[in-house]
Length: 376
Length: 123
Image 1 (cartoon, each protein chain N blue to C red):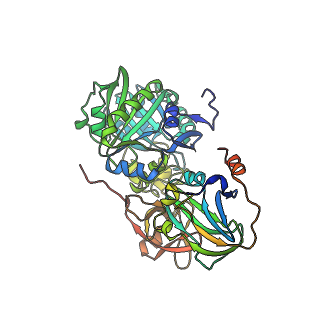
Image 2: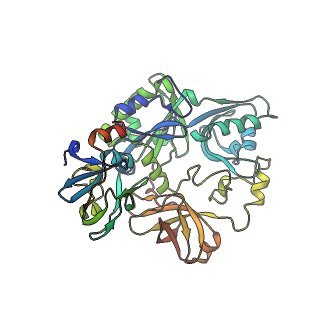
Image 3: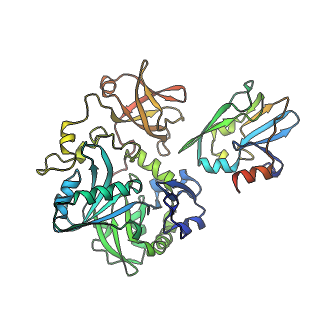
């Protein structure tokens, strides 16, 4: 496709997905695979073997220059200067009033080089905020490389063995069996530079592979071939959503937004108030969300009818919250949901219900995540 | 599985198989594919009176909720318990074992034929 209107962008892997029988969904203006047949089978494959996801719609922004670390300490809520080369860190981009512009993963690729990965739907606001905040920092450049970089995720317990069996992946600076969670390493794929992060959005062990867009199809095919006898199957955004939900991971636009303070979303730990220097949103975050602001909780219910985004959370007498994400958990077999709920009813332990299209279903508040993989 | 070319259809992606005064109702493969893996089905019970166009049941997938609209006025004579206990039948055999309800009707409304329905969904 040569026409890339804002609502009809396609990944460099689009033709492969079409050939693979994918059905597509619009996601932040991109036509991305939602499933290749059975989203449940894809979900279970990631929990038990492995799945391969095309997430090339994600935005990649290279921040480099002498003051790059200090700049990101100012621009983001975390202390990025504290991470080592090739370490990754989950962070937040806040606005002045403490609202969340986006949640990000930042890889440090050197003393003065950082690779910022943002949500596809927030590419514009993230690039704009970073570019604006760079004023006052010496020789820092913000380079939106999203159009040139494809991102393939291999997730699941068999991921490592699949990458190791992919013979065209060579020259790993760190062997995969030594690569820790939330670290990354340089490598090559058949002569092209490859960044391999041990990161993901499924709650399983797994890797995210960044490569120049014109080599993405070959990399995908090589991984699929290497994983064929290890249970690897292509997986779409539907299973990605149920996987991240089980893992208690927030999704921007559902659990996170400009009207959400990090503390409400349980992300207070991501904001480093101990760092000495100022950062955008600091004073608002220090002042904190208003008294009684709703907090994110996990809810489980019995039966098979799931609460969905937008459904009310109620007590016997009042509406006290709203569901932001929910599904019948494929792994657990019962419905799970994340919801913003008045903290007072959570503290009091009041009986809660979700209102499923007029039917009240008793709900139990649980600690997130709903699902945690057995440690390796 | 029913011969899809002889079925009648609604714009809400239901199919209707008429046998005498009884209509067997299900959702089309197009609807099932759009929903994704179906994990929960709620159907009206035998004896229930249906008003054409009203929401009478639910078909939930992992990612969304679909509604079952009554394609005819009438009375439910049978609900497919097999699909309630194994909702994946809606995906694996939407025109066969994945049927949903049988409705006894007195008058059949105007429905789409196979050509009209395939034109509607553009397939």
